[in-house]
Amino acid sequence: MKPGINAVVGDFGSGKTLFLTYLASAYQGKRKVFANFTLFGLDYVPMAIEDVAKFPDEVRDGIILWDEGHIGLSAYSFFKKDTQNAVVFLSQVRKRNLIVFWSTQIFKKGVVGLRDHSRYMFTCEALEPPGCSRIRVFDSYQEDQFVNEFLFDGRQFFDKYDTNEIIMPKADPPPKEKQKKSKKVSKSP
Image (cartoon, rainbow, N blue to C red; front, top):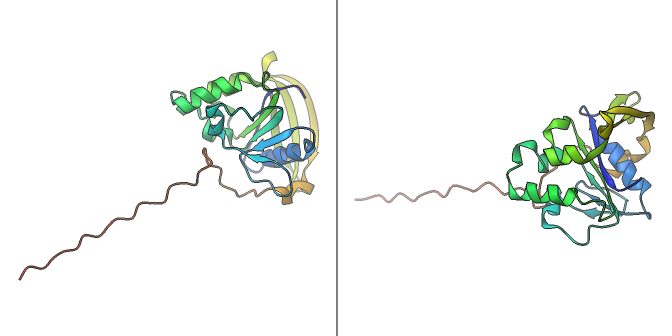
């Protein structure tokens, strides 16, 4: 696959993250894998979505896999500096020889620059048994023209990721809730 950006879209449990995990496995030894979700037994570099706003030089010649891409690059956060920088980074993935796949339930929730640069849209539909999906591919640059359809059996990749992992926009853990300090009440005689 040529460098570029691709969207993976589907309902909850339709196989989006499973498909991204398959891609991580398929590219082992061929490209460096960057991912914002935990992969078990696969070589990858952890990378939060907002990390690209820092223009990391080491992010080259690889594949970036972003689960829940709308979280870090939300359409509602376009005016944030990190979001604008990430869009600039994404507009130059060819120059860095990067393939990008991002997943979402609703395509329009991703920031405009991410949506506009997404060449192919892979739509996932859950099938039986669990772990199997019908994936349809559309070319966003050709008015969403249908390109291909295939059946995906990802059951062998279930143990390579945690389907219940909470995805955060930044690599840092969420801040702990500040505890209220109790005031000592002095008793006057």
